[in-house]
Length: 291
Image (cartoon, rainbow, N blue to C red; front, side, top):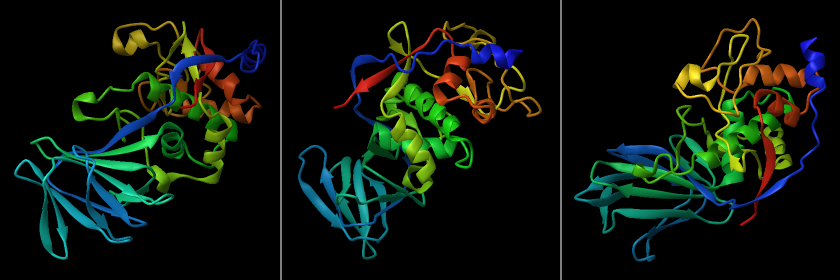
């Protein structure tokens, strides 16, 4: 009976609002206040002083370099010797279509390394859609249903946009861990999940004209939880519904979309948009403006 009721959900495919908010790049913190880091690139990469915009050094391709804080600025180890960089904030830019290696993973975009006096913070500055490509397969198995991936892409994009600036005190927007959203960079990408991101490009969930932080967790143990039960404050776009993950132990806060439930609904024939309309209440879909 419940499944039949879900199928009756009225859904006009993408009566899209066009948000005035453009889709800018997002800054993801990969390391925060560490005493050293190792960075390489698949191509030659320029190191640029953020303050003067001047070229400092060119990294060789496929060669790792150690960076460490040094007397308020940054030092880089070159041929066994540390070279002082007279700046506490640098940008690393690979050649077009190049990748940067940090934490034994490859990433798209540019990188910023800051010395804030407490250590080095390494930040991936990347276009939003490329970021989401690294989130979907990190948050949901690539072998799962395509429409579950599409639902995950929209939820992750919504969460990211609603939480831009969340970690501003560290100089970035979000962490790369499940504390915000798991993000594995280009190393995590798969053709299947990239397709889901591209097919939903720019689409977010909104409530009363604002992008919602579309909370989700692995499983809710049979029924999702209201925000008030977890964070002492209810949110109008979140409700408690059967989570379609019966038999799977609750894993996470249980608020919003159950990822296992999304996959099970996709197996029953629901598309990504219907899955989201089921797990989130009083929401519409909107498309971000291109830059």
